[in-house]
Structures are given as C-alpha cells and as structure tokens.
Image (cartoon, helix red, strand yellow):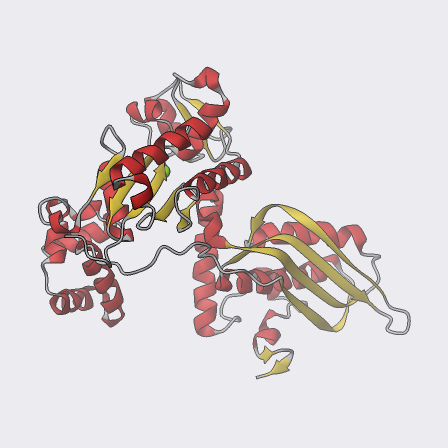
Amino acid sequence: MRTSSERTIFLADCQSFYASVEKVDHPGCKDMPVAVAGDPALRSGIILAACPIAKSYGVSTAERLGEALKKCPDLVVMRPRMQHYIDISLIITKIYEEFTDLVEIFSIDEQFLDVTASLSLFGDAESLAAAIQRKVMIQTGIRIRIGIGSNKILAKIATDIWAKKNDSGIFTLSAAEIEGTLWKQPVNKMFGVGSRMTAHFARLGILTIGDIANTPLPKLKDKFRARFGKQSDIHAEIMWRTANGLDDSPVTPGTFDTPPKSVGHMMTLPRDYKETSEVDTILLELTEEVCRDCRRKGYMASIVTVSCMCSPFDAPTGFSRQMKMPDPTNSTNAVFQAVKQLFYKFWDKMPVRRAGVMLSQLMNDDQYQLTLFEDQIKTRALEKVTDRIKDRYGSAAIVRASSVTTAGQAEARSLKIGGHYK
Ligand SMILES: [Mg+2]
C-alpha cells in the first residue's frame, strides 16, 4: 500500500551524452562508430564518450584513444565542445521542469526528478517516464534512460544496473523487491564501489550487495575499522544504507551554492623586485595561494585579475588588468599562464613593491566535474594531494623549487596570517 510519505523519484540519464550530441549535429555519422576524445590528435588522449555502435566494438569510456582505435579502426573521433554540451544539458533540464518543479542536477548528463506530486496529472510512473523520454528524444534527439524508485539511491541503482541495459530504458526498483533483485548483484555493481573497494570487500568475505545489506551495521563498521582505521565508520554506514536502499535526502533544485564574487591575495614585498625570475616567483606564489583557496572551497574561476604597484612610493606606477581564461579552472598551472601573460603585457619594468592576483566569475567545481580532460585529471589529483599535505603541515611543507630562492616569500608568508606572524 502506498503511504502518504512515499515518494516517486526518477534518475534520468542521457545515453552516451557527448557522443549522442555530436551524432545529432553530424547526421552523416548516424550509422558510424563515433567517440569524443580529450585530444583527438593524440593517441594517448582519453575517450570521454562513445556511441552505442562504437561500444559494440568494445570501445569504452576512459580508455586510451590508441587502444580504442585498435579495436575499431574506423572510429570517428571528435573533439569535445563542453559549452555546447552544457547548453544541451540545460535544455533537457528545462524539459524535465515541464513535468515537475523538483529537478536536481546530479551531473552534466544525470538529473533527479521528484514526480510524486505530478503522478496524478500524468498517470502511473512508467507512463510518465515514457512520456518524458519521448519528449526529450523529439526535442533534442538524445535518448534518456530512467530509473524509478522511492528515493534517490534506489532510482540511481535502477538506472545504473537495469534501465541502461534493457530495451525500454525504463526500470522500477521497488524497495519491497530489493531482496530478489538488488541483493543478488555482485558488490561491484553498487553505486560508489570501484575495483579497489570490490577487492577489499572480497577479502572481508563480502561478495554480493546482499552480503553488505545483511551484515548488521555495527559488525560492518568493525570490519571496516579493522581494514581502514577508525575514521571509516561513515563510509561503512554509507555502503550499508546504499545496499539497503535507504536514503531520506530530498530532490533539491538548485543544489549548487552561489559562490562569492571573487577570491584574491595581495602581498607587499620586503624589497623592490626587478628581475623577471624574482617577479615570476612571487606571481607563482600568489597564484598558488589563490588557486589553493579556490580548490579548498570548491570553486573554479573564469576571470583572472593581476595588479601591481611599482616604486618609488612618491610617484608610484602600477596597473590592474584582467582577462578571461579559455576554460573555468582552479589549476595553479593554468592560472599562472594567464597571470604571466597579463603581467608582462602591462608591467613598465619599474621595481615591484606590491602585487596581487584575484580570481572572479566563480562557479562550483562540481558543475564541471565531467568536463575534466585527461591532463587536467592528473594535475588536479596532484594538486589535491599537495593541498592536503599543506593543510596538515602548513603551507611551507611543500614549496615549488622556484620558491627556494631569495625571492620566494612562500615560507615567510606561511608563518603569517593576514600579513602578520602567527
Ligand atoms: Mg550517461
């Protein structure tokens, strides 16, 4: 029996999203294997999306282009157009909003819809899902798959394990039936479980999703603690709740927080800096601080501003100029390229006394999570590790080689807060 608190949640997923958008825009490629790759010119580039025809040759997302071409020499490889994909994603979100005002963007090609209140208007859940699927196909040419459940986790699992595989692209995972469906699945099919976690589970004697669900939570926490240490309680609980299909979280439109207007740092130098190498060092340190701040807060920026004050103080010169970067970023290396470009365009070669770097037009970086190309993934992973070490041991723990010179201020600044010693 349906209780009044029972919800109907959809997770709608776009099939092979980037590749599907490209096929719609290139009708001549309709019957060809198509993939979108980070850099089509490089065989080491990574496949970001492959159409179903390409997948039938064994081409898969995240594999190297060189490998993919070995399996499918006729693969049509296209360069990604991220802004275009974001625009199409927003059009699809707008279509969903015609059916319910509770739409939450989960990623560029996945949205949650709470259709509980819309069902009486549109009939039963599966007919509503089919109507939405048809409308998106007619208006955008993109095929969507919809998993249906009484909460977000069941809807997500319904999509990942079943709706992506069956002919209709629609599947309902009812909480009452998880024992006969979900629990029989191997652990690696569960949302949030990768190959390493699968190996850990195997060593704990946990092979199916049902094995997780049926281990009493305190016992699962003990097993996790023995393997991962005592901070692992939360992880154990997430796994256990997922396996049991438990999730109270609401579908929240506009989940992304509004970022602040800008993040910036300014420093007054202990003496005049005249040499390019010295100036570079300072600019890199400022860039690093600002980018680290952004990464910690989860923002990416589109605009960088560089400002500079030159001596003498009685007749100072200086400038403050900004530019738009090619892509939103919080990567030190990417921002530093722009900072240098700006600085050397406007610097009058007078000795520098004060310099600043500011990032603005900020956006949440999770909105951009799927736009990462191969090289960015590596850079970001490295920067995240570096940030973590600095958070733990102070920002002087790791400094770039250029900062270990007389021009470097990173070490001195790490001992200060707001320009003052701690
Ligand atoms: Mg998808």
